[in-house]
Amino acid sequence: MRRPGGEGRYEMGGPVCRACRGQAGELVLDLGQQPACDYFPRAADPGPDPAYPLQMWLCSSCGLAQLVADPTVPEEPRGTEPAALVAQAADAVDRVARAGLLADGHRVAEYGSPHGGSWLGLLTDRGLTPVPQEEPADAVLDCFGLMHAADQSAAMAERVSRVAPGGVLLLQYHSLDAIIRGGQWNALRHGHYAYYSAAALTVMLAAQGFSARRAWQFDLYGGTVLLAASRDAGSRLPADDSVPALLRQEAGAGVRDPGALGALQRDASARARGLHDWLVAERSAGNVVLGYGAASRAVALLCRAEADQSLVRAVVDASPAKQGLRMPGTDIPIVNPSRLADYRPDAIALFVADLLPEVRAAFPEVEATGGRWVNAEMLSASAARG
Image (tube, rainbow, N blue to C red; front, side, top):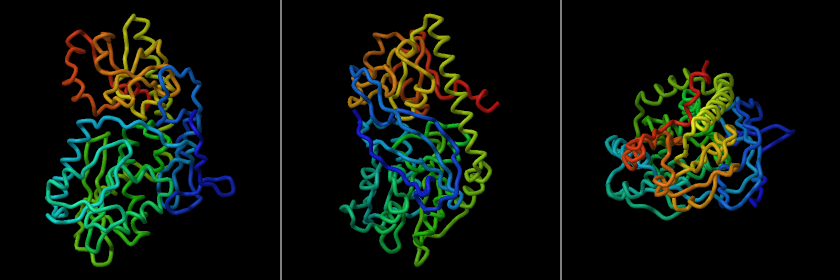
């Protein structure tokens, strides 16, 4: 049984911002009681799995969208790094190097994601030298790591404190702009405490005497951003128009507008219902459906869609650490890709759209035998925005 962690920030019964400590804000997404997204029980464990509130709150003061509370303890088995993530890392390092921010002989420190993936190999190949924990570095990189810190203010302070004079802080994050535009309501999950916009990050950085000076955008996860920031005093990093342009783009999406973020609540209902209806129709037609990608973002989707093994026979995942387990809140087992031939699926619901080129190339037999890959998150896109 998963142990409760008891984490939360409240004063007088209301949320307190994890970054600026403000108390004014609005609840913009409420997914109700959900199983912990990072705890995958053994397939033989009958459950029921404990469930916890899953809510997003938008701070009116600094604009940070954030998890209200997380009473869970991180226990996620490490996944296999997708090819799309590897390719994006190489692209990002190349862009930053061409901007002159990764000089041979520079020291580098990395704050990585607990889900896996590292840029250190790419950076050492370019002549940078990793430094031990807590030592200063010319380039401090955070790649999807900051969002895992419950205390956002303290986590940002720690990272900027390690930036050497004249150095740069590089922050890679899944964009709140992309979450809104793509209706990615199931990006909300336990263990992910913050959902960033450049607008919110500029406020967080300013509190530490830093400014965002460059921004690069990528297609990964529907939209990710790499932000380069440096100290206001003595910075040798000139600013360009990329950050103001990004801020204008975000304003158009409504990253600080509770109404724009509130649309995610409608997305959650419409897309979960769309997945449920599609699965029922497939079962009625006598079709075998599998899932692919035992990602944390699939947990709430499957639970809200009321999916079980009668609708999804199994979820295929390449991570040995997840095989033999099951999807939280369901009886759906997680199996090795070698089992694809046993099931001969008519359809595979893909829970991470970025994997499509990779899985089509790796498993051509799916389509060769008449099967099809289906984006599980977009089955009701028109209904969600209607």
